[in-house]
Amino acid sequence: MLTTVAAFDRIGEENAFAVLARATTLAAQGRDIINLGIGQPDFRTPEHIVEAAVKALKDGQHGYTPSVGIQPLREAVARDLHKRFDVEVDPGLVMIMPGGKVTMYAAILLFGEPGAEILYPDPGFPIYRSMIEYTGATPIPVPIREENGFAFSAEETLALITPKTRLLIINSPANPTGGVTPKAEIDKLVKGLADHPHVALMSDEIYDQFLFDGERHQTLLAYPEIRDRLILLNGWSKTYAMTGWRLGYSIWPQALYDKVRKLSVNAWSCVNAATQYAGIAALEGPQEPVAAMLAEFDKRRRLVVEGLNALPGVTCAKPKGAFYAFPNVSRTGWTSAKALASALLEDAGVATIGGPDFGVHGEGYIRLSYANSAENIARALERMGAFLSERKVA
Image (tube, rainbow, N blue to C red; front, side):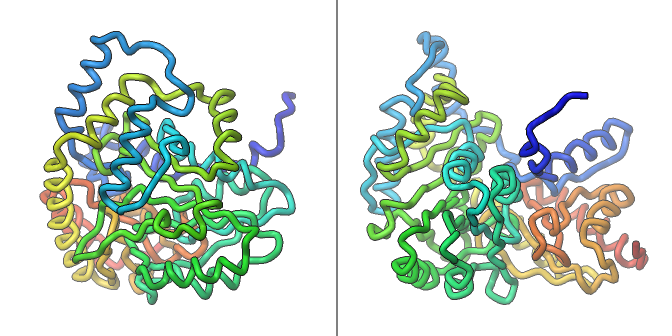
């Protein structure tokens, strides 16, 4: 019998992909499945971005690039952040990654080991906890509560820090809740962290342009007092409908940058060249496709929230960011949100994700992605209403 490293038994996964696989199987069997489970824009990558990649390939950009990314793209990232948030970023601290998850992987590897504690949002992106457990560190959930508008509480977060805490992960706008943490709460957190200089931060800002109702994004880069321990995660996947391109970036403190560069040399070498040139075109080209996509998401957001609140036993707070709704289903009669999500897929043909897939505080909720057409969302809500009206309970 093969003997494997025990750490690999601790790795979890992202159940959205399992739901996608099941939905695909059911569709292949002839079922009409409406997928509100997967978290990716249902828009095409803007044409000028595609053309930039094609041009790069035709121009012969077929080889390795520097492991940290090509200099023009790193400079474009720094310019974009300055333009949008009036923050100064040294291109020499920008690292181009093959997607956002790789930054999570690197950051958690840097700080996670047996005896260490890492704080992460719960409910939150499941890979946070998965990677923390893989390293042998102790995952400490930071409760993300509906009564707080699905924003983290600075006071509650700071109270969880101990001498063993190595890393704090925050995410706003947030997956799976769509919550946006107000600037005042972030100010409190940063002020309180002055008493905990041993704690690094990873700020997952991948949804920083997905904001509604006049909300403005508060980047952690705007706080110079924490820049020497801040890791920023961002990328192109959501904003530019480029999930399959696998292109992300991160900003690192000077003390950590070379450590992650060495990891990149050992693990992924570099991001493919043509995609990096597409990334430049995305940041520096026309932004009208982004604005159009956000306007459409806003229309769908209103549709899905109104529809969910009309379902029996369901309430849904209006999300202020990202493209997810996180309705409360605790009054439907279903004691297991995962069982409800499974039944909605198998019996009603609507793919959603059970809240517990995002953490222990996700029980009583399900996640819906409104990255689908308004027509399909309306059909899905009708099916969910019919299913719940029949009072089926696991």
